[in-house]
Image (spheres, helix red, strand yellow):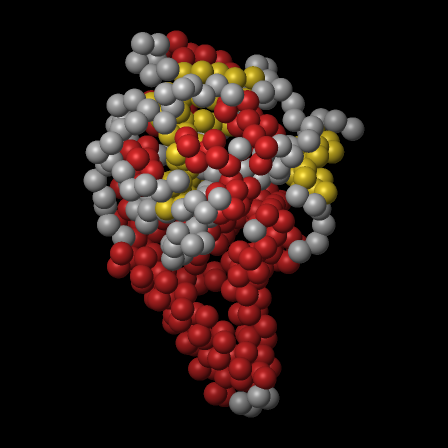
Length: 392
């Protein structure tokens, strides 16, 4: 009897997930840019140069927003990206203000958080909205205006987008990463449980001052999850526009994929345990139910096939809806990579789920993780640097 309840819960979870994706597609709409255009400071913690770094910098320069400035924070002036930023600063002189901040090495927090704290110290009195952008996104020209609108026009304390990962080639780690992330990218949004994603966030300056972000980030390993918790603690609302999905290249090998996925879930476990438990339900329940269904089939109870076939059919429906979302929201140049991901997921879903589940289970234990070549250790919610790349 218990086995039947598990199988029924599995199918019900898939039905709810499918309804959620359908609800996303039904409600997504392109919204006009904000009619109010308060001054915005766009803060980016950046490290190193990838193939897409020049495109990211160029995208920031082309935002269709009348009053914004750019602040880049990096660990050291010896970083390969520093000359690019200096050249950009010279090129934009007189049009878009560009500040470059050298944060130094972090010891008691994540380097990204350390860099952003240094960037925060450059805020000016007339910066009404503070936006955060990750250097691995490729926003279109309307990104900043659409990100700012819920804060400037609709009265939200914060607005956040999310990434749509696009595989840089057809290697399986890239396709798996992109496919696994789709369940989050197209999840139902609600101001009650929205989580800020650090790659694309706009924050009202008054709300920022209220939560005292330097204190919140003092020893933090995560920028966005701690920001979310601080906003929630002050009763602030977080808007997540459905149409604000930003292309983000996915370039992994197997080791980097697993390390990235485990780190994400580990930080969620520490800083947002409710979301971690929800993720655990959606990942562990199908694995347990599938095991039960296969055991029942092996015992001659063929009715168990109905649960497997029902789950697979609902997955195919979700993938079809996500293809329509991609066609609607992504730039034309990004659609082939998005479709390749969805095609891969149609037949490789067992492999995708196994890798996804393995990363989640690995996040349930341990306090250490590696991020951008730096080894960290968590002590409760506080982070400390254990080792940097190249150190013994």
